[in-house]
Length: 78
Length: 135
Image (cartoon, rainbow over all chains, first blue to last red; front, side):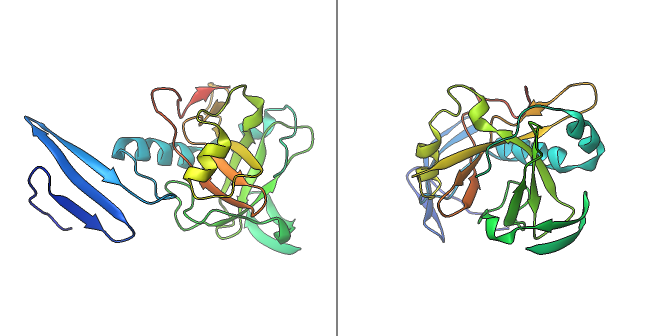
């Protein structure tokens, strides 16, 4: 884990074309500007975790049989 | 055709010419990149079966079932995700926790570029969409 001290206006560059700039620091908060290439997702940690958790629950087997019981129409196959 | 043992459906035969590649994986599943869609005739829910991790499969429904979904439109999302955008399909991952019916992850649909069969899970605005929306 790399820990850096930055001031407003200073940047962090991550390989792969990701740049993070500190734009403001307030009491208890920091405002960041993130730029990333097309196709690189930038997500708040808690949103990422929520989606990852929903994926894990969808893939978990404990409700598989219930899903199999839910009838309807056939999705179009890509 | 290939045989894939060890899935939750037992050993299945799969048309690997229909492989869908997810270069960055689904969120939380970064190491599973190759999937096939297993439709179930007459059923709304299909399975997105991993070829890399046989025991991994996601139940999905067709995003086209939902009017005006997604916002922004799928083609725009495909372009943002670095996919081709000529012909795009949307899949919504679903779960069915006991007693709660079918819940859809409307927050993070799978966008499929049909031409290249490549796919990305994109995350929409959490103020507009829920990861556990009743269907």
